Length: 184
Image (cartoon, rainbow, N blue to C red; front, side, top):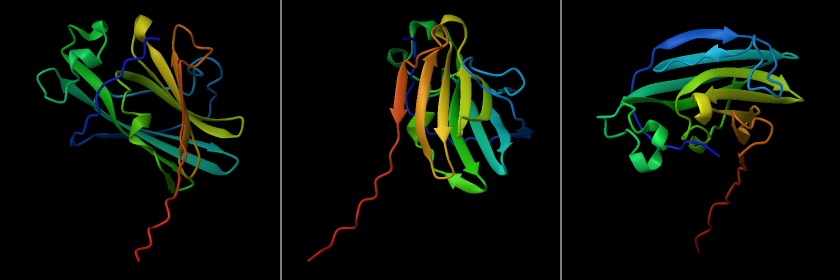
């Protein structure tokens, strides 16, 4: 499976806020329904809103472009040979999700390896909110489906666009509360 991963990148870059996009639409088996996908900026932020049965989900995706001369640029051992001559790369810097104004917890690992994102859509499918992000190009293209509710992201599925019917990677997220220790 050609899933490209990159190092964890911590950057502090000011982002230009795009207008809030709103749509219904369905994602279905293909990465996107034609009316619900929005272009993801190479540096900036996109906000997508969807509503279903009186519930509203808002997703903000922040991206940044990194030049090869920047120390944060992923090393060659972390990238595929596809990127051998690439001078700049776009990474997802942050994803913020809220449902009915309740902020959902989004682990960093949900978006840490998403590079060259192209399009994004938010939909309500089979009783679940789903963010779908398509990225890459040609034979190394991918899409990721991120399942969430008002509390947290609870599952991601990453697909190779050449084999879109079965995920090549699936992660389930659980939150465990640790009781405070009692000192004696």
